[in-house]
Image (cartoon, rainbow, N blue to C red; front, side):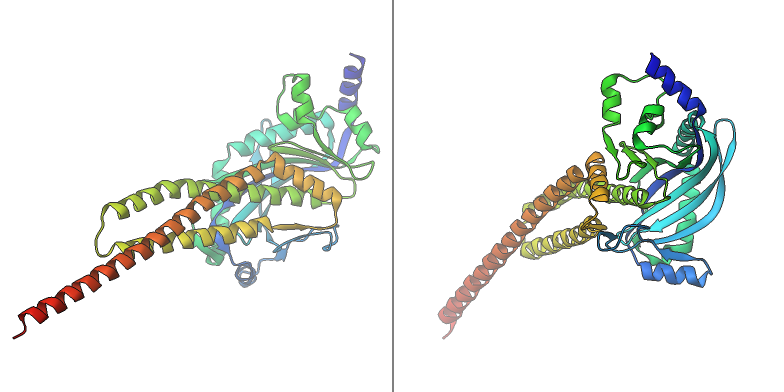
Length: 378
């Protein structure tokens, strides 16, 4: 009871002097995005863009495989529970066809309890703001649609919410922060007390590099305390979400493709004609193209972030991927690609066998024709 009272006292007196709430929404918009073309389009429209790089981590320690293109759109207003707030809008384009839209609400001189309440209010607002996200995405398509290779409307989306604190009204260490405030309401969105087991699971993914920074990850939210204003952790979390988005997209794509593939194979086998070998060959080429395209894009996704020396960010990145179940979805995609590869090989073999049978049949026809000609010849 005494510890709980101390936490409540700290939460009512501790003030977030500078921070932000960042709401991410990620979309798959195309097979790929020509980033150089996107930069040229933005330059033609007199809009500023930049290649995104990690702010403090040396490139030799961790870097983007292909740095995404970042740009800013006009700020928008969000209607929260009891007030309206202004949010800046940032956009990032990844070469493997993903677009991230980030709404950032600046927070200054706000009590911790009010900060946690504001995070939950933003979550409720953006979760139901499909019209806002849709309008912003249409704006991105209007500006940069010419850079999208094989654009498409996909229902696969990802979202993530991050509460960021850069400074409190007095110095805090990671330990004193966790002793002073309850992070669970901010990370869970729940107002009712959670069980000890649920609290333990929610706070399990905690990371600190210095004594005065802290990162806590959950499935759909994160809390970052970074006094130095470093944005690298947020960038890493965005990339992990982008990888989840793309793996989910290709998992669903292959889910739709497998039944269609089975139907086409069954139809080709039922209708045996002189053109059966061509039908098998065409279907095999189609499957081979699908495997090649998916494999190429999944390799781009896997290489979106290259980690070599930065152990701290690597731990956060690996934990985020595990937490988001990216390896599990990746394994599912690999299994389905293996099924399609095996089907391609079987179709190729059947096509070769059908061609051989056709050649043998034609040879027999020629032999019989020669025999008939020899018999009827005077």
